[in-house]
Length: 298
View 1 (cartoon, rainbow, N blue to C red):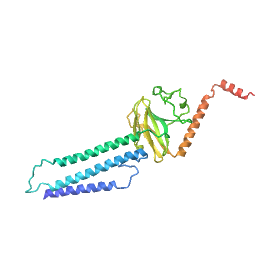
View 2 (view 1 turned 90 degrees about the vertical axis):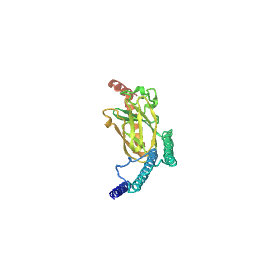
View 3 (view 1 turned 30 degrees about the horizontal axis):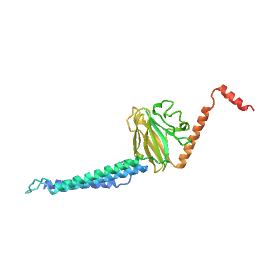
View 4 (view 1 turned 120 degrees about the vertical axis):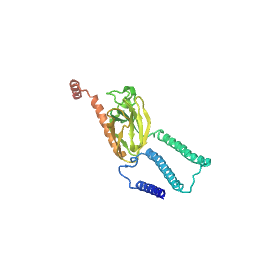
């Protein structure tokens, strides 16, 4: 009788625990997403989340089913007076079935996830915004194409204090490129990034984008592209331990409307043009005086 009461208590406690967990799962969404992944704001990220959700609910259902069966058999075949145990060598047919089912599920997940991976790393759209992102100890630099709409060529052997983007001097396309310490992108527009590192291995990590990609010194990682679905402020972080200042290696990300992006880009291009014009003017007082005198002559 005591054993029966104990098993009954275990059954009720297990049922209560499942009920509490289920009620918490259907509770209101917390703004901090304390019990789930951060908010997803990219098209590719939504597809990644759909796969993760499927795996989560599948494993959750299997867990509940196995626990229910376990508790059922624990109670039904408990030790009782006059009940004798007997030996069972198993059932080959059942063992084949419960081995084949998870095997088929795993194979299906492998095929689907591999297909998803290939699609997310496919050729970026031709109209995508191209941005060169360089990681260094301990920060990020972003380079955008200038008025010509083309990024200058890069040679990773040319990194230096004066040439922080390793631009090839002979390539005129890089002359009007402008830089930024924040990543500004237009919402709904494909963004194609080129990842570089000046020193050690860093990683481009944005949880809300569902993106993680290592930046390796001496290499150009050119297969990362994404498309955002909403505006907002986010943060780019390095999730690869890269030195004593790793904890502080981050950069702001602003996803803005196309109109705001065009205005920001136009301002940067104008500032770059003014900078180039100023650099072309002689700074020597004698040369400046001679130039001014020449302009005053009829």
